[in-house]
Each structure stands twice: as C-alpha cells, then as structure tokens.
Length: 550
Image 1 (tube, one colour):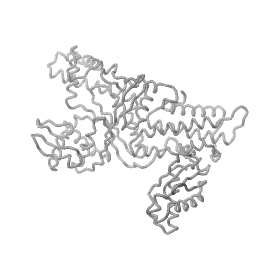
Image 2: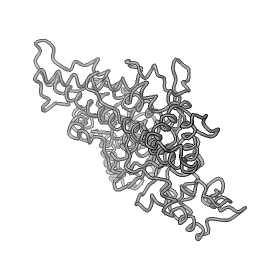
Image 3: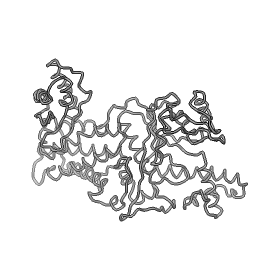
Image 4: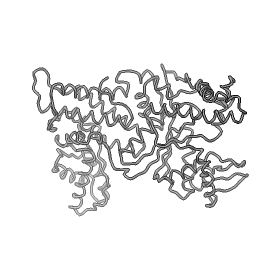
C-alpha cells in the first residue's frame, strides 16, 4: 500500500465515519495528507485529518481521531491506528500490505512513478537558448541539465512536452560576433565590445577555409560571410556539445524568422489596435503596468527599430498559435524583469497570464581546493559546459547541476564530484544501483528465481524503512512536476540509496555456504529488484546513467 493508496483508504473511511454520525462529508479535502513520521517508532504513516475537519463538523479532534482509529483498525491492510497529541493519527500497516508496494513496483517496472496530473497538457519548455556567439557557460549548463530533467519529469505526468531552443540570430550581438571573427582573421585584437578566446580564432580560420576569398571582399560582404558561416559553425558546436551532454531539442526556433515573416510587425499592430500600446517621446510603449508589470516597456524605439521585447511578444504569440497550453521559460539570474513583462504581454493580447511561467536560475561557480576557477582554456572568459564535463564527466555534471533548487547559487567542488566515496552524491546513488545489480547477477549465478515472494516476511526495521521509502517515489515525482523542481528527485534518490545501504548492512540477502534458499531470501531479493528499478527510474529522469558495475 503506497501513501497514495493509504490516503484514498483514509478518505473513504473518514467519509463513512462522518456519514454514519450525520456529519457533513463535504468538508473533507479531496486529497488527505499522509506523511511518514520523523520517529519511525510512532508508526509507518501519520495524518492530521481529524484536526483539519473536526471544527468544521462541530466535534473534538481527538474524538474524531478515535472514531477514525477504530474504523481504520478494522480495515484490511491496517495493523494499528493510534491517537497522538491533539488529534494526530499514527498508522501502522500490516506487513503484507506494506510489502505490496514492492509487488506494485515490480509490475509497473519503468512506468512506476508515472501519473496523470498533466494529462492532455501541451507544454512548450524553452531552455538554454544561449546566444550563438560563444560556447555554453556554466549558467547555460545548469539550464541544460535542469531543463532536460524537467521535460522528462513533466512527461511522466501525461504532458506532451516540446523542448525548444530560441536561436538568437537577430540583433547587435551577432554583429559584434562577426566583427570579432574578422579581427581574428586579420590578426587584429578583438573589438572593444567584441568576443575573445581561442574559439573565435578557430571559427575565423574555419570560415576562411570555406571562403578563402573572404578577406578580399568589400567590408559589408565580409561581415555577411563571417556572420552567416560563423554563426552556423558556432551553433553546430553548441548543438554537438548539448547532444554529448544528453540534451536534444525538438524545435530550434530562429529569432530572425519573426522579423522576416512579419510576425513582429503584426504583433505590434495588434497591440496598437487594442489600445495597449501608447506613443511617447517618439517611441511606442506597452502599457505593461496595467497588467501587473513594474513599469511600461518600450516596444518600438524612437529610431523606429524594434526593442528586444518586440521579438519576445511575437514569439509568445507564435507559441500560443502552435497550440501550447503552457509556455515555460527558463532564464538566467539577470532576467527577473522578464516575469512581469512576459505575463503583461500575454494579458495585453487578452490571454491568460498563467499560460506563461518563468523560472529563474541562480549562478554556478566551479571550485578547486576552495578557490573559484575563473578562466576557461577555450572561451577565455568564462567556464563552459565542455570544461565542466572534461573535469568531472557528464553524469556528475548533470547531477551536480540538478540536485540543488534553481533558486540558490551553487558551488561545484571538483574534488567532491570526482571522488569515489559516499560524500559524492552521484557516486553514492550510482553505487547503490551497481551493488543491487551485482546481487541480481549473483542470484542468477546461484540459479535463484524470484517467484511468489512472501512480503509479509519483510518485518525488520530496515526492510520497513526501505519499503516505505520506495513507496514515496510516485509522490516525489508528482511534486517535482507540479512545483517544477527536479532537485526533489535527486534528493529522494540519495534518501533511497541511504535506506538501501542500511538494509544491505543489516539483512543478509543471499544464502551462504550450504544454506538452502528460503522464502525470506526470495522476499529480500524481490525488495532488491524493486529498489534497483526505482533507482534506475529516478536516475533516468535526471538523464544520469544507472551503472551495473563500478
């Protein structure tokens, strides 16, 4: 019986108890809270439903808890239900009901943890979207890992997720990039506002290899050639780097297409016609303060050129025209202003601002021996995704980026993430999976088949703790999806690995010497198989491998 199963049983029991006493059943919450108590001696699960409901139906919480305890104790799968404090209920499951969690995991396999909370939801998930003017830095690396994991997690709940990369190929930064390439090709220093680093020289050389005559062209044509070929080469590098990091996109959307197609102009005219743009000092402004933004935003500048927000507005309209119910933007720490402006733009079009979600990620630092690492060998100015992967590998890089809430800055300690000990979180989790895989191989070598396990035999403290931890997984995945917090999966996996390692240390799993295989061995092997399955499922959501040997 999983926590969700128990919550359903508890609600049905509470509804019956209230109805039998002529009390209002409608006051019951749709989903009741069932949690694991901090002290396992108090029981397997606890609930505060009596305290939530008693006052609403005109009774005492402890009295209501007593009625519920009597009814629950008589229910199948419940061993005991005890009242604690002002009206808490501590519930202990029967051993076979608790062990049924293991059977459910083995039956569901890779699908265990999936749900239906987002069935039918069509989500556009935009992340990374780094400018094609340089390699992906650590901030973009964080969004690559977190965004990819979030897409996987949302999909488990029934959402149709489209991963999208917004390709910024319009604007001044591309002009600076092409001027930097020309300077490198000529052996000159980078322009004051340009880009530096060995990668610029490499791309400049590659452009010249494709167009040996490029420096003989007029200046304007030179810039166009370096711009077109250079951007393609840089973006090919970005896509290759992301692919090797385990991140691929369904759509690469070109910003420039919004201008070439007239989508920006059309969006601006729509806002003018609706009265949500006003003219002042020669510029056109969005009345974004009318829709909750902290200030009005310039859409068309006084020189007639579009401000950056003009593309954002047209891009949002394009997403909605493609049928997305929800547009999630994952942006860097310096983009807080985008939350108000994007929601205001949606409202200005008469749309629901809640169709826009903006997630803001904080800074990432690389640390070696307690000192921040500041320079990249290739980029020259910032640490890149390539640098991180070279230092600690793909699995550790992804896990390190995902395991902390995006609301907090993180320091990635190179010594920690390359260590092969329990202090390294990804090693700790992966080692649990490898140890479980070794047990499965050893059982197979001994000719032991896991058939008809008797889960009522799993009664030790460590077995119970492991089973209850396994049962939490679906709820953790649902929370991670609903709250957009992939780090919950990583922290759960560490908790599960800890529960497994404690079980392994306390409970003998395979027979030794001439000992015959008994029902307890079979039950424990089934528990191991379930643990291995859930670890593999969780690691897959993070895009981290589940090794069978380490």
